[in-house]
Length: 268
Image 1 (spheres, rainbow, N blue to C red):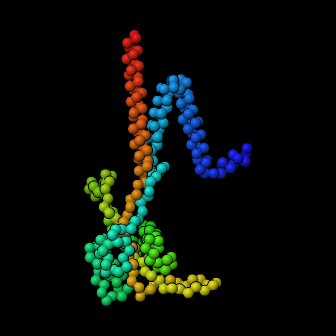
Image 2 (cartoon, rainbow, N blue to C red):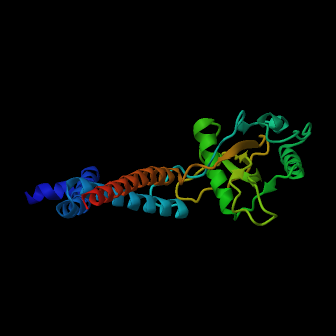
Image 3 (cartoon, rainbow, N blue to C red):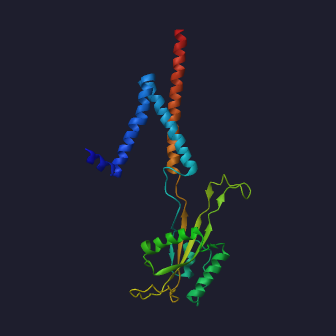
């Protein structure tokens, strides 16, 4: 018997079901048992259910405020439409995130990259510093697009050179600093510039050679758009649903109390 109980304790799925059943049976069921013996089965059920719905609503509101508890998808970078990977800098405008592509005819790979940087900065794009945490998030998302979706490179065959961002402003605002009512956002884009690396010969027992950029290949540009996610949506739905149930049950209790007073007044 003891070995069977220990086996159940090590199964996360079964243990989760058991915890929920114990919670319902002891906390909710115990509360209803006490209320039912004092108020009656029907009235005790209404009071217990109303209290549970009110507690669920309060808990979900706290989840929404602090972004904790049951959470939805977090913000992330997604491939932009209609083009997510640009292999030719002269066709960067096809991604529909820049107004005009730079004139790179006759330029080397290094010269093309410099011309693209000047064009992006002229259109308001901001180059992120290497120490910026947002740069790492954009590079990680670009790695997934390059290696898995586009199958352009494998790991270790390229290196991110620069990350540019633009957009994402919130509105409406009161003045320049008061933005507590800014519930709308403009699209936020990111461009990750990657360069191919020269194949390096590996020797057993020696450290890998330093990566060298292959200047004979053009730089690639990964275009992404920011998905704001829905981190607080599940908690908001729980708060809304629990609030509706709470107010309906409270209204039923209020109506019952009003009927009871009318009946007692008639008897008097």
